Length: 199
Image 1 (cartoon, one colour):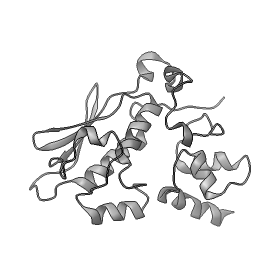
Image 2 (cartoon, helix red, strand yellow):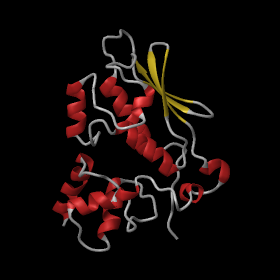
Image 3 (spheres, one colour):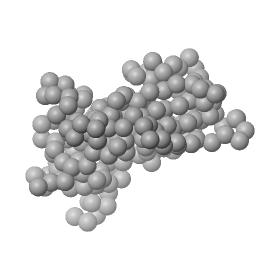
Image 4 (cartoon, helix red, strand yellow):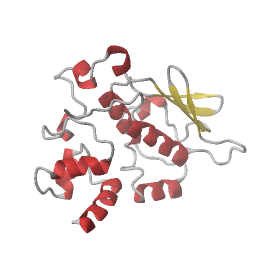
């Protein structure tokens, strides 16, 4: 028996939304701050400032050109592995919501701030795992989700890597593919360094 976790909100998606808010925040707004508000029926991440460079909520749901408002912060986050690829954050958020059984996250401007809204996972209302609700026909980015991916949802990236390596040695790119990433992320590199030192 393997424990499977289906959190109310997908941790990777909320982390990415928070990182995006910090990278794209308008720091010229006095007294503003990125905020998280959790309600009975949804979670909001509020970012002071409005969309810039002709960005719209609709454009965030499809591939788009990255235009960070604060490129120095974005560069630091990228090098630290907090963000994986420029211009892919919102698409990853949508995928992670779908994987966890959450409706698609939404973005809107209200009161001179950008609101990212997450609705809770349907797992808590239906009792069905996300893959049971989606059906076998619908897969999230099927080309990057190999069949060998474990069905359990590990607590951390390190646990996921260790589970994959139980079946034999894998290269960085093979690990990245098994984890459903298109590229080797900074976070994966950070996990591999101590593991390699431990042997």
